[in-house]
Amino acid sequence: MKPYRLLLLSAVLPALWGCASFNSGDILVERGTARAMLADKSITPFSEIEVYWQNFPYRSAIDSIGEGSTRPRKQLPRPVEPEEAAALRSRAKEIFAEAGLYDKARGSGTLRLELTTLGRWTYRDLFHSYLVDTGFIFIIPSSLQVKYLLTADFAVPSGTLRVETEARNKTTFHILMAPLYPFFSPGAREHGLLKQMLWRSATDVYARLKESGGAPLRLPPKQERAATVSPAVSVPPLQPDRTWLPGQPAESAPPASPDPEVTPQKPDQTWVVSPAPGQAPAAVREKAPPSTRRPAPAASQTTPAAAPAQNESPDD
Image (cartoon, rainbow, N blue to C red; front, side, top):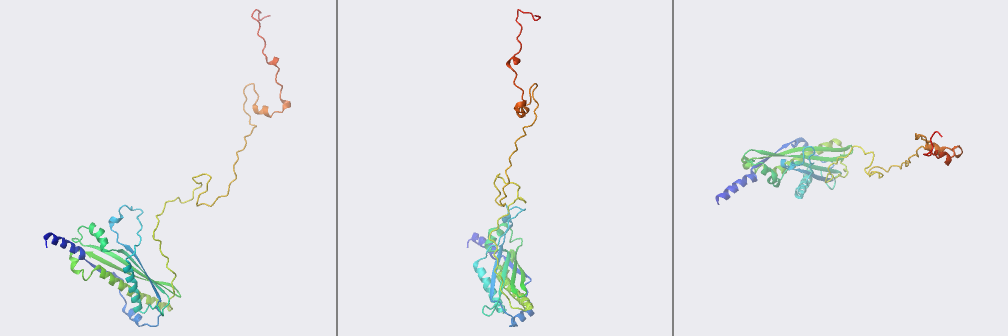
């Protein structure tokens, strides 16, 4: 083998298994409760099990660049692979049937299991962002943590009950973790963690079902969340007093009752206007009756006096 191929292979191998995963959380099963659950034949099992999986995938710090800090984009769940969802559904029915809590033939009621994972990653996600952003990942240890929440909802005559199981899976990346990879690989550790969570949820469901003292009932159908969430739009807190187009009502406002049309009043014609010197007011002349009006002066009265001739003296 050529030297450069050996160097390339030695650089790629730690990236494939230079990590180890460790599980933690409240997932220990009480031996006494488990022994009583397996021996109890009087409890009524469920006839139907619904399994849902909400996965919020891993997001690198570089993925949030450009979103802003005041109103960051809300992360939406991304569906897991169909094979993984089918495997979880089959594993849940198998474990609850072995625990005596699921029997489709003689059971009654519905058990709804919902698994929520936060920060769950795949090797494709790591090679896309995490391994690229962290240059010295195999020299300085680095860790990723995935959170798991398993809820179980069921109905009894007294109401609806819920039990929750939380767990965490922490994966550490370092070149010294390469020897532990075959025993603590992330895929195998997650498989064992989900199995342990299902057994712990089964014992908790049995304990709550035994306390209620009744047979399980059917749950109402689950309301699916919206696939997309439209961003909020800034709007004024109150409806404006008038629309932008005069004469047209607002679209969201109810049609307003037509207001009576405002007609301007005719101006008062009795206003007194100061007349010019030697002239009566026009309004008074219009208002005065014909009998009270003075006759127009004769032409002789209005004609000015003839000027004296030039050959006559003014004293004559």
